[in-house]
Length: 208
Image 1 (cartoon, helix red, strand yellow):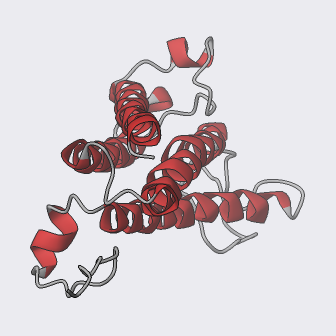
Image 2 (cartoon, one colour):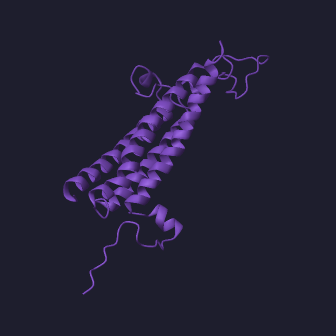
Image 3 (cartoon, one colour):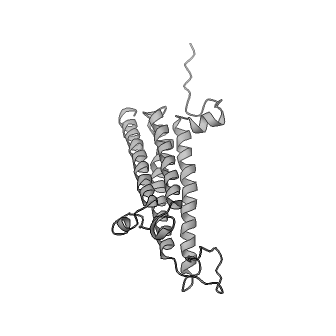
């Protein structure tokens, strides 16, 4: 009598369409890839903020972050009033994006989802649909963060320049739509991380 064949994670041919696979998937590998892809895009945006800050610091005085308008090319002949709010905004969104939307989602949502079931010998995560929900909550958090960057904030300028830890007194003096959206974005990202953590812990305890 022939032995039953045991199929592994990658032994089947995926016949799902593009939309179904990447937008409605409950497969731990697909969701892990989505986390890593999204975190990579957000990380690239955050790195651009860092590069812009380093450009400003490479010479004495202010060349790029001007009240008259942010510049990509320094122009010594044009008037440039230093824009301290824009500098604070760059620092704030670099830190918030890197911590809450790149490092944590990539490590736990990306690598955790992709490799943990493989290491445990489990077919998938304990709660596949919750896994999908946590990813899309993360995407909503990213969207709220981008909206916060564009919404009116302190000094009648876009963005919340309060530092990435959102501590007072700056967070209390920068009241506005941008600050509200930034706080909401961090909360939604935190809720996504909590759901992902519940899934990881349950998978580890019950599917070994």
